[in-house]
Image (cartoon, rainbow, N blue to C red; front, side, top):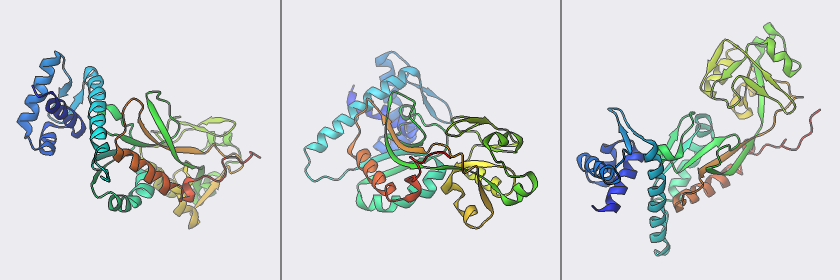
Length: 303
């Protein structure tokens, strides 16, 4: 058994999500990749992958084995790169990113990044669900909020202010909340993927909110708030257009919440390839020049 070929096939199958895609990437064909992974499972005497008609999924043993072989493959790649002078980063880099942040801030940086590193291929996985870096083969994830998983490491690349807003038409009908507690009597548009759920946090208090609309997209929150269907909360830049054209009004400005960090996350015990490092450096530099991602009010006092 060519162990290097076999573990490479396994890793690419995990990262692409199918034997067919791994076969195309490696130039081996789907039957060979499937056979090599089956041989690996037989050699290890354990099932590494659950196979369905739609996709491959790691078993618990597969998760552990993938993390270990990914470290080996990354270390080998970095070792080879160290002997090649003046070689630019190359290969495929997978980065998971939330939708609103991706469309407003990340995608505009992509042309310059790809021009600077012509040997790189960038796979941006844009969605708002939690992406498991081990299970899903992404090397980096851009995340909003504080890091809670001790198996990961984070590099802060931005900080933004959250705001509370409603349309003027909604406020004309329902009145303007004066204190956070007043939100209990309002229809609030709830973003279901918010880490605090249906509890909105301020610096000194938190308030349970309710409403007839629950959505799993920040853009949907923005559209519904603009349509006058309730009070919303989120990054100030998310509501920028509505605030500029006068459709939306800021609320509870005397009760600001804590600023929210934007971070690049990576697995703590995995050697980061050069392509991941240069992406982090590039995005960190680009974000440092964006006022909306460098909250000016981090140290402001409350009332």
